[in-house]
Amino acid sequence: MLHSLSQVWPAEWRPDPSNVVATIAAMGLLWILVEIIKFDSRDEEVANIRGPLASSWLYGSLVELLLSERYGEHEFRWQSQFGNVYCVAGCLGQKRLVISDHISLRYILNDPQLFARSTLVRRVSPDRDPIWPRPEGQKGRETFGLTLTLTHSDHAAGVFYIYIIDKDHRRIRNVFNNAFSLASIRRILPIFQECSHKLVQKVEELRSPAESTDSDANTRSTNEVDIYQLLQNATLDTVGAGGLGYDFNAIESPSHEIAQSHHNVLSIASGRSRAMLIADRLVAFLPDIVFKAALFIPSNESRILRNFKTLADKFSKILVRDKEAAFRMGQEKGCDVLSVVVDTNCRMDANAKLSESEVCHQVPALLVAGQDTAGNTLSWALYELSKHSHWQDKIRAELSDVWERTGGKLSYSELESLPNTNAFLKETIRLYPGVPLSERQATQDTVIPLSKPIVTTEGKSIEEIAVRKGQFIYIATAAYNRNEDIWGPDAYEFKPERWFDEGHIKDKVKSLGALGPYANLLSFLGGPYACIGLLELQVFFTDLVRHFEFSLPEESDVKPILATTLLPSGHKDTKLLLKINPIS
Image (cartoon, rainbow, N blue to C red; front, side, top):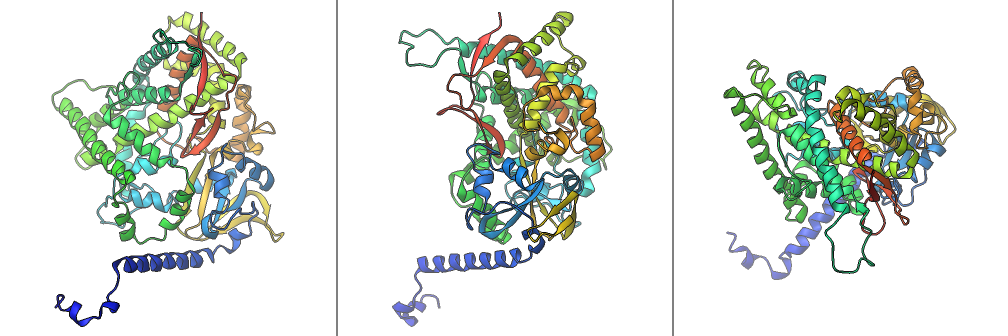
């Protein structure tokens, strides 16, 4: 029958395959545009919220918000001009709310089912979404299992989330709680200190390269080090040793296949382009089957993602099974997070125990959360330290006293009781949150309360905002941390001394309603890994300050750029070039 079609149909009637594909693509695009117009026609009240004029219909104001050469140059100006709640134009005419109002944020963050992660993130990791539950009895579905790759916007400075379904929340939390107890954190400290010692040795090595017979006239000064990638390698080693009980040895040899694959995935997740802005807008309207098929289109990106999934699955299973075998043989458990989790899980009753896959899914979570954003925060701390030499003197004097008293073995309590050091780190975390913008979408119609009335473009004063299902919202973490209602008129200045009167900050935030779990900052958005991430920062920071003096080169021009996390971008091809000299 099929063979005879060529005889029945005249040649001029036979469809050209390329035309068929083009027609289908055009019809698909037309369908998406119709859906966009139908969806955006519901934004009546949000459209009346004041905000900046769009620079174009295609990109809205997102190029200025997300792709600026220096992150915040537009956003913080808009906050000053329009207040803590305003509306920006997204791609193709979409309206997005940008919120740094403390009452609004508390309402949003306290109901993660009502305000879920974005459509793109949910589609990539539907079986591990803690805030978008499946229908009862429906089995988990996995596209790539890259929960961590594309949920990077939901963790900051060492915080990670355990991706679970509502009905399993208590069971999983019970297993993981013990790993994040104060006693467990104290046992990890020596591991971090050993990694920090290796970092100090590596910095000394980079400062003093082997002597060369060539002239040094055209080479960089030996006391200048682009330290950014080294800090990333160091924090990978700490999360490997302290989080997983595994030695990546990234400080000495950053060539481990998991580390390399992880780096490649983060590069994809942090891609900055106008095309990605359009793709993020369109993907919400693609049918599931089309979206999943698109993920398998041959490309470098899909190859990297599949490679990471394969390696991460294999790596996670080996780690978990080795620790389970050690438990069965009666061996003493390690003090790393994963060892404690596996040991606790093995002792649980059958109905409370986690499956192997549930434990394995958290291995990449520990890997991403403990390394990337912690390394970025440490980078910004050293950058600000390089600009404020008098704070180096204060912190170094403080460390000298405690070092002499303890013989160089600082305990957890002693690290927590360093006023100058911790004030400096808190101020760094305030102005350089690992993720300055987090995305949410309303899962149903609701009303968002405001801390104080705002005036719409029609001159109407409103005390709440009615939003429709699907409304896109930015949780403006960096802007909240600069909210003058909380931090005062000097909120945009780097002033660690503000933390010496932390009681005043606590009283102010208490009267407004606290949001963040650490120092009343929103930088962490909650999460059990916060304490471990902070300990990691304290150990590295104190060790580096005690051994080295930091300053900026003459032509330094380090800018914060948004690439999922807040990254430093320096002069020419450098990221964070610093002058580093040893302390006598």
